Image (cartoon, rainbow over all chains, first blue to last red; front, top):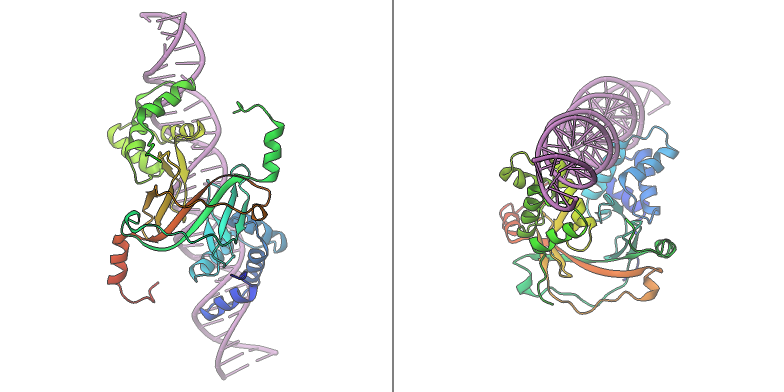
Length: 154
Length: 154
DNA sequence: TTTTATTTTATAATTATTATAAATTAGTAA
DNA sequence: TTACTAATTTATAATAATTATAAAATAAAA
C-alpha cells in the first residue's frame, strides 16, 4: 500500500549483488532514472546523461537499462501508442494515465476494487498481474483543443 | 454489449467516404486485417499480403494501415513489452490478455464492473476510456516452463 | 475512351536498437 | 600503492523498422 519507489541505493545494490562493477556512468543513469517521473525513453536518458557526462555513449545507456530490467523487479518498461519504449522505476503495483495527444504518462497508485478475469475468459492462461491504462487528454492538451475549435481538422 | 467486429465493407466504406480510391491492395490488406485475430504487426500483414499478391510493397501496407487508423475508430494499434506495433479491428470496447513469454495477444470482451478514477488522482486529465491488460502465460508457455524445471536459467 | 489525381512501387533515407572490438577502468590482491 | 584481470565503456558498424521520394501505374469521373 505504501509507496515503494526504487532508490539509487537499491539499484546499485542490485547490480553489486549480481557481481557487476559500479561505474560513474551507471550511477548517473540510475540517478536520472529514479528521479525522473516522466517515464523517459532510452534516448531521453542518453541526452540527459550526456549533458552531464559529455562522453557518455548510447551503448552504455542501452546496456545499463537492459541490465536493470533483466535483473528483475526494480525497473520495468512500458509502451503506449507508438510513443517508444519507456522506463519506469515505480515498484508499487500501479496503473497509468496516458495523454493521447502529447504522450505524457502519469502513474496512478490508486487501489481499485479487485478485478478478476472469469476462468472461461482466461483461455487457459495463468494470470500473473493486470494493469489498467486510462487514456485521455492532459490539461495542456485540453486547452489546445479548445483553441482550434473546428473539429474537422486533419 | 454485442460483438462489433469491423467488416471489410465498413472499412471500404470508410475509405470511400473520405474520397479515397479502392484498390486490390487495399482490399487485400483489409481482408487480412479483419479475419486475423492474432493482432498482427505491419510486417506480418505485409508477408501474408505478399504471399497472395507478389508485388505488394511494404510502403503500401504501411500507408494503408496508417490511413485506416487515422480515419478513426475502425482500426487501432496496441503495443506491449516490445513486441512491436500490432493492429486490431475489434471495435468493441475490450481488454487484453498478453503472454509475457511468446507475446500472444487475446481480446477479452468481458464486461468488468465500472472502474472510475477518483478526480484527485486524475491530475486534471479528461478521461476518455480505459483498458485493462492481463499479463500471464499462455497454455503452451506454461508447459514449456514446467519442462525446463530449474528456475535459475538465463 | 481519355483524363487526372491518387496510388503503388522501388528505392533511398531515417531512426531506434544491437553487435563488435579496441581502449579504459573498477575491484581485488599482492 | 601498484599491478592485474575481467568487466565496462566507447566509437563505430550493422541491423531492423519505419518513413520519404519520385517515377510508373491505375481507379474513378467526364
